[in-house]
Length: 440
Image (cartoon, rainbow, N blue to C red; front, side, top):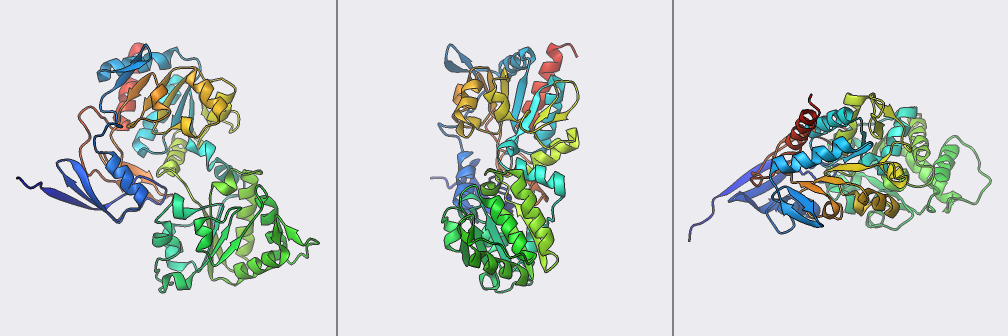
């Protein structure tokens, strides 16, 4: 029996969440992943899912009479181009789980089609972007927090499940240059309506009422300024606990607030982030304090960066008048779909059918869908055309932005199946096909 030759790749980036861990070790044999080290369970699952399986699309697919059939790339791209050209108001959505180079081509395609261009920020950290545009933000890199932070606050965020290695690499257990004793040198606070697993390992858990973060943030700001509030509690938090928290905030040497969708997607939305930013700014009168959004998809920060370079705006962009317009709420994917204003959709590296409101999904399924997607998903099974991509960061190289906006280079550790192309090449060929059909 011949023993398989094993090749080990070191310092590999993990293309799963915004932490973008860059210390993975991957063993490859016969172009299949056989072992992973240093990765979390979810990252490991993503790498192994790139191996050929019954759930992965290995050839382009076209739906005919309700069933899919294998097609050539030319056939599939031809049908996709026809769908996009015939549409009066197409939507290009997703882009947060692919490389920056593909995102740039996607922006070019949307502009050429006079389409709507949007990414997953419109349903996650879009309010953070709006708030930062309004009042700025005191941001820093994850390395600074690792080396300096002695107070870490997770507000509306549960990294134990959403960013599994964030705690051990940057925010809790890790030993930093000025925090050599790791966990013993840090004080962890969790503000959340639910007693999450992150809350259970915190030094202080503040249970806030659902949708009342804005009131709590402003109560903290008032107490910080020395105002005596005539209330026994705010947002379900006793005044004694608020005063205790303010005292902890003022006495730390270097603090950081990591906030998640529990803050961005509750009532007040971007006004929550406005208040959090103002709180951090006011805390800098007493100590050193910063904040950072806990971005979900591994390159949603990159999508916002690339779209801004190309259009001037980070998400919810409309090209229907042949120039970029920006208005979240009007040009956001969910709002457009709820109003049934989209008559064709190109989904890139996303699965909106799993997380959009039911009404938006029903309206999306009423019209043609093109999916650039490697696996069977609730979105892809309703698509009219499926274009199978290579996995960015596993089967092709590219650039991705970590949640702190630090660009990192994705590695290639194995070859993609023969008929699977990088997202960038798929979008380039689709753009060429659209131009050719219009004689340009």
